[in-house]
Image (cartoon, rainbow, N blue to C red):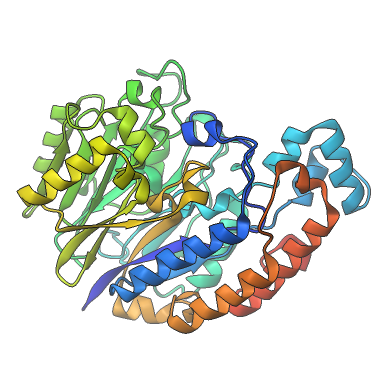
Length: 442
């Protein structure tokens, strides 16, 4: 049966702003307090979805979360009407208001880890929402993520949903940003690569400056839940030194799709041994593309987000969907031209302008959750979440109606913004046929 990879992009939320909440993410910290443009951000995301759809890549989308999130602010001790809660939070603890107003669910690479039916013993597609406990602003996402996924992948004949892992630092789970699947064809048994920054329970080597967000214990727990076969799973440790240089997730230093694995030579703690693990476990024609430090420094990799590009398969070609920052970085541009001329496994590179997301520390790969599906599974999902020319026009009209073109962190206290967000999300749940997934809809 024919299978394919569907990229489910996160729709940028109406509270998209630059609050600099993500310690360890250099771009997020460097652009703190800049003026954000939520309308431009969502339109840039929609344009990327449209372009990939027109290339023949199957495309879906996931909804934003409810923000500002009043239940979390109440749990933090603020009381009164919604307007009073926002005012008190801004006056007494603006950092908490910023955290519980973040549009970070737009980066759906962190939404969950997904295993296709070809790999799971029960022959179902498995989903585990990430707990994202390392960052306050992201630690509140898993409940809404789970509801969104269940509303889109609702047929239990094909799909199996798990709860997020225990909310403890030993089970820190950042989702698919630290997970890659290699395969010959999407409907064949693949090799799942889990990358962790630290082992958990105080064991092993850790970075010295920035936090290692993903643990080995979390990776192992997800693999067990998804009923993966041990011989088709590889665990690799991320190089702690590159984490300290701003490589906060593995998808900032490597990316893979089908039989192509594109990685920086400094990506892993034991690079040569780790690549040998992949070679030994993979069955088929594997194309390994190692980017030398002499060609692209870790600093340039982080600045340009070369590896936070998407690798997609379209019309018999492997295409790298890269941010325009790669084109603007002289060293990275030179390397890309060299790589293409040497025909190492990537056939083409397409550049996309994603300034609003990039300034907050998220490139093309951050914006998508990859789900490999066969034809029956694809037919069983909520088709209103599948991108089309019609949905593009409808979402663009919806965004222009509801989104502001300027937003600062101080605007988050504005009760009219809360009402605007709720109105937008209420309409979106009808567009997507999601039902009442938000707190304010209860």
